[in-house]
Amino acid sequence: MPVKLGSITTIIIFALIAWGIGVLVWFPHNFFRPQKGKEQRQTRIIVPRESGTDDAADSGSAEERFAYDTGTSAKVALGTGEILVAVLTEELDGDLMEEQLILYRNLTEKESPLYITYIDFDEVSQAYKRVWNAPTAATRPGTVSLYTKDLIGDRSICVLVSGMNGAGAYTLTVFRKNTSLENKTNQAFNKIAELRIDGTIAIQEMTRTQAYQAGIAKGQSFSIVAYGHDDAASPADTPKNILDQTEIIYTYNEAQDRYEQSKITRIPGTQIEQRRLRELLNGNAKVFEGFIDGLWYYVSPQGTLDLRQYLYFDPKNREIIFYGDETQQIFTWQHSNATRYGIYVTTQNISVTTLRRSLDVELESLERIRVRVFEDVRLKIGVNASWDGSYRKAGAFENQTTKTLTTTMPSYIDALYNGSIGKVRFFPDGAYEVSAEATIQKGKYSFFLLNGEELLEFRPENTAGTGTADTSRRTYLVEHTKETTGSEAVQVTGNLTLFPIRLGTQGIQRLHETTVFLVHSGVPIAP
Image (cartoon, rainbow, N blue to C red; front, side):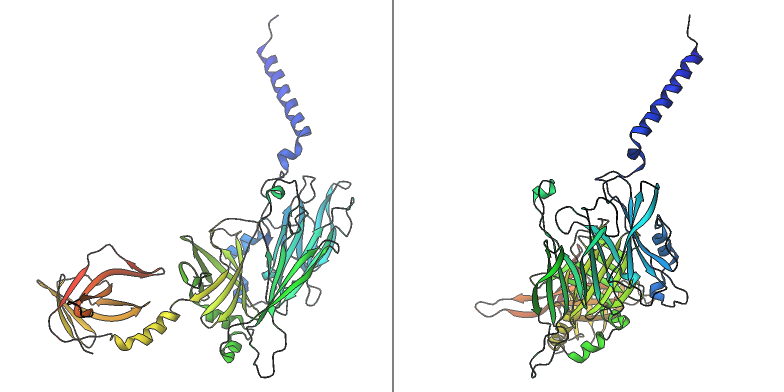
């Protein structure tokens, strides 16, 4: 008896449904839960905004608030007066179910610290619940960072909460997940470090062995290094330097299950005028912002300027530009908090709103700053340049060089030249005139020094009827023609060779344009 086509179709449909049900029963987590080894979600930061706040720097734009509010919901409801600050959603205990670590602030408490709570899925009630709470040392929501890291080297989970407190000190609180507990209790995490210092704190990471990377051996624990004020008494006849610091190293004590101080080193600060220091380090972040306003070049370990890497601080437009490895990134300048040695700045990338970067900017001298950058470790994108180090303000030394050498090179001269561009007449009042065939170009000129190099700038004026419309400024590198007669010393004549250049962030750059030769015509150069 032939089988009807409709019966075959019905059998196929029922078979597919049965297969689908079987897949959902046997492999539910593969469809709906994040898997181990996959990249986890980004830490979300929310800055609580209380009514009546007039701080423009902390208000943020609507776009910034939207970026922070996206995906920041907690899996449980917070209590009365508790305001959400940060959310970290990860798989933390190996059950393929997402857990949450939440930072919150209690508005009912005066000078409330930021609290951390752990939210886990309860198999009995089939719902999420809070299973552990603890206070941290941070109090300022706009400065906090919440992330996890294997500090100990045994693949245990350590939760790090960094930020500032009301006294302007930098803080770090570290909790280690207690894997020895079979059931969830209020001791799901143990506090292994809580540091406060009027400087900065950083994790001293190091490369771990291949055996650790392969999961067959433990790795070396990371140290914590803190830089703070040197409170040691100085001799009575020696004035105290505000910039003196101490470097304190904390290492992990396995027997005590906590970090303990292991080494302290005193770092003498640069001796500079103390009154100016007190003006800059008076606890007003706006004053220090004005000091760092502008372009700062990276200083290499050899003490030379690296023009390929710089920071540009623009407090007026609330932006910071990072340039390195031929890549430029622009970050929105969100918050500034005064520290003992400078300011602590939090920023957000204008293109990738989930990328946050914090900077600790300290004063080294009136022409140098030291910068430590804290990346949002949950997201690794962007340039590869290491931003930590010293930076020198652009123009400081060049201006000093110009002042010391201008006595040997006047800005204006009185001379006439014949050259490849025509007759060039320099007047002692700073005006010039170039005559070539039927055209005459007039304008202002100036000789000046930059990095020890003599430069010449022409600033043409747009004069009707001159026969030329080229009013663009032109800058040249100046070389004087040299002659040697027999055994006599090298003598410099009045002839000039002008190489077209461009002045930019990378200094003097020669252009692939025609070189200008000028031959002196006998009019004496003014001394």
